[in-house]
Every structure is written in structure tokens, then in C-alpha cells.
Length: 415
Image (cartoon, rainbow, N blue to C red; front, top):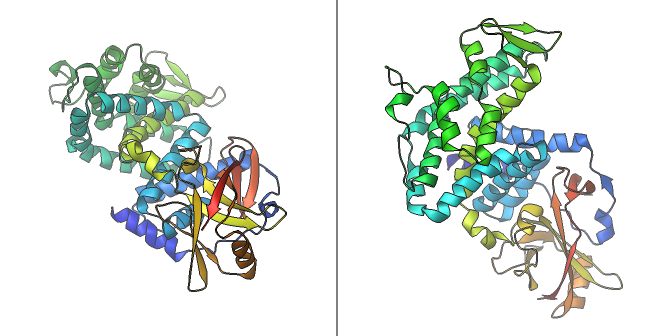
């Protein structure tokens, strides 16, 4: 995965110092999560994903998201980075209202994985139809990037055209239909369409697939309602044949042929749906690589360690919620081990030995000498970049985080 190497090289070049917290109060200045904070998180995620889609050629702005990736890469593994990236993407899609698409396609995918894993492997490894799909997706990403430069209100024709281009990506239809074959026939079919779905030039008749085939394939399922919200043959034809006019005052477009009309808002909804269906078909493949082994990563994503010498000495761990959520009982956390090297303290919170590194200092030495060989309370704080989960926030290393639920306290031994 060359792009992983390029990303790693980038974030390492931007390494940040990890602040050591000597008291819990230092990070508990309450913050309110605003709509602007949530929007910034979404933009950061899209910026990062677009950077990857573009081949990691230009250094993105050092966003809060990439600062977190910095911490993950610093002492952990590319697998940890990949899990966090994919799961954060899903959380972001849930936050903006498109999570149903991703979760629905994942549920179908995972159902097949449990029932016919060998046949699903054929689906995963089948590359033929994806080759052109990748190129078509890249073309559309470039168009969407250019759309950002067009003044809002004057870009509807471009959005309609972009919808038509997504509509024409064969890979989406094949991949969805292949999933249907796996569900209903328990067999992988490279070509799940019969000859009536092709024209004389052997091109897929997408209108027939949308209007007739998919409603048969997915009747009574959640994906059927998603597809109905997404695919509109009349909208596609209006764009393809240029037979529409724009009614600016009503914010509608109207067909020149059959009187059909559709609002600007509905066009944007359908364009977003078709983009997210396309993305979801790729996302499930990435998630599949680690999902069955998620429990093995429950101890990862620990981004900071702190300690306090008050009346009741405590330790505390700040962990990214994506990983904290895997094991709420913290079965992996029984003790914390410390090792000294080069005037630094390596903090190991589990047997997997992925350290949090802090500078050695007298405050820490006093705390450690007091508790070495003894038990103390350890507070685990689950945090997430702002996505509107709880609305409660705090700042850690000048990054605004959202506290996703109350802290967890566990008695551990200091070694």
C-alpha cells in the first residue's frame, strides 16, 4: 500500500509533542460542541479522503484529523491508522445523515460473509469490472473539485451533468447485482444480468436495470428504498439529451419533453446518494480487512497518558472512542508498565506493547515512586473529534475533542 507509506512520511514530518497532564483538571475546561465544530470535522475527513483519492501528491493542511493520524503512526501500526480512518468515516456519514447507505450495504455484505465466505472471496477478488469504474470515479472526483470554484446558484447544470456521469458507472450496477446473487443464490456471478439487460452493442441498459431489475432483486429490503431515493431515469435522460430548462425562481428544472420536473434540493439529494452508494461499495471492502479481528485492537488508539498526586493518586488514559468502544469493560487493562530510555518514559498499557511516550520529569518520578508495585484507580476518557454525539467537549493539546460518554474507572496495578 504505497499511499500508506506516503501518508506515514507526511505525518512523521509534522510530528507534534505530546503534552503530559499532571492533573485531570487541566483538561476539564468544559467546551460546547457547535455546528461549526462538527462541520470542520466533516470537512477535515473529506479533505483527507480526497487527498488519498488524488494519490497523496500534495501535502494537505495539518488538520486536527491529521494530528490524530500523526499520533497513531508515531507508536502504533498502519492497521490501527486504517481502522481509525474507516470507522471515523462511517461516524461522519452517520452524523450527516448518509450512514443508512453505508450500514445497509455493510449489513448485506456481512450477511454474505457469514453464510458463504468462499463465494464472497470471489466477489472481493473480482477486479475486471472495477478497472473502468476506478477511472470513472476519478473523472467524477475531478469534476466535483472544479465545482467548488463555481458560484453557488450557477452550478446546477454541472451537478445534473455529474449525476448523469455517476449514473453511467457500470461498476455500481454490477457490484450491487452481484451482492443480490450471493444473497439469493449463494453463488458469485461475474455477470449477474441476462441478455435482455444489454443493447445490440452489448452496453448495459441501465434504465431497465433501475426500473425493472433492481426492484425485483431487492424487493422488501432496506437497500431497495435507498435505490429508489437515488436512481431517477428521467433525471438522467434530461441531462443526457439536454432536454430541460432551469426555473430559477422556483428552484426547479423542467423537462422539455414530458413535463417532468424536479427541485434543486431533490437533485442534490440524489447526487449525494449516488456518490455515497459508490463510496460504500468500496468502503465495505476496506472494513472487511479488519472487522472480524476488531477485538484485537481494543487497546489501541491511546493518545495520551496522565497522572495526579492529589489525595487519591490516579492514572488516566485518553483513548480515541473508535477503539475505546470495542471493549467497554477494558479487559486488556490490568496494569501499566513504565520503562525509561533516553530521558523518556515509555508507558505500556497492555501486553501488545504500543507505548505512549512522555518526557521524564520530577513530577512523574514522585508519582511513580509513590505507586510502584501498588494498585490505583485508572480513569479512561473516550474522545472523538466533534461529530455531535454528546455535545460535551474538552480541549487536549489545543485540539477540541468531544467526550462521547462518562469516564470509565478501573483499578489497575503500577509496575
